[in-house]
Length: 295
Image (cartoon, rainbow, N blue to C red; front, top):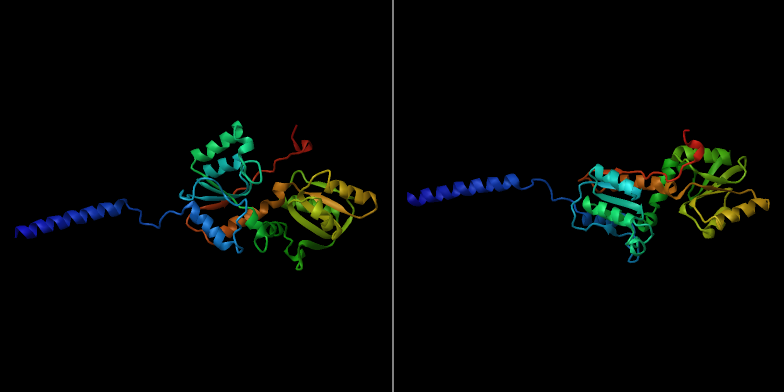
C-alpha cells in the first residue's frame, strides 16, 4: 500500500510538472530565422546562387528570429526607422545600406553617420539582406516585372525583347507626363522635343552607361533610364538630336526607376513566407524642385 501511495504521489507531481512545462513552452512552430528566410529566397528565385555576388547578409546573423520583414528599394536610415517602428526587424533591400555597391565599410568606418546607422540597426536587433543580383537575374527580371506592372505596360511589351515597348503614336511630353503621374515622380528630366512622335520606347531601369545606352537608343524613339553620367549618354543624346536624329532620353532617377520592382518583391516573398508580417516600405524620392515648394 505504501509503495502504491508513493507511486501515485510521484505520478501526480510528475503530471503537474509536465503541465507547468507545457504552459511555458510555445505551442506554435519554431520562430522563423533570418537564415531560413534567405534559404527560401535562394530556393525560390529560380536561378543558381552565384559565388560572387553583392547579395549577402549585411547586418545581423542567420540565427536571429524574424518578427517581420520589410522589402524596400534602399535601406536608408529613414526606411530602417519606419521598419523598426512597425516591428519589422528584417529588411530586404535592393540597393546598398552602406553607400557602396559592395557595402564596403572601410571608406566610412570612422564616419559618425555610418556609426549611427550601424548602431541603430544593432540596437533594434535588425537584420539587413542585400538582394540585387539575383532579383535582376530572375526570369523575368523582378525589377522589370514590377515596373512594367506599375506603369500598366504589360500589353506594350515586345515578346522578343523585354526592354522594348510599342505604343500607339504619342508625344514625348505626353509619355513623360503619364509616367511621372503613375510613378509619382517629382523630378523627372527629359531631353528631346516635347512634341516628338513616339512609338517605340526602350527602358533600362536603374543605372545605364554609354554602352549599352547607345545601342538601346538606336532601337527606339525614346530611351528611359534611371540615371546615367551626364558627360556620357546624356551628351551623346544631345549630339544625336543636334545632328538631326529624332531621339529622346527620359531620366527618372535611380530610386524611382526600380522602386516598383521591390513592391513586387514583397508580393513574391509572401508566396513562400507566411509566418510573419511582410510589407513593402517605399523609399522617399530624394530630390525636390524649387517651384514645387510652397512659399
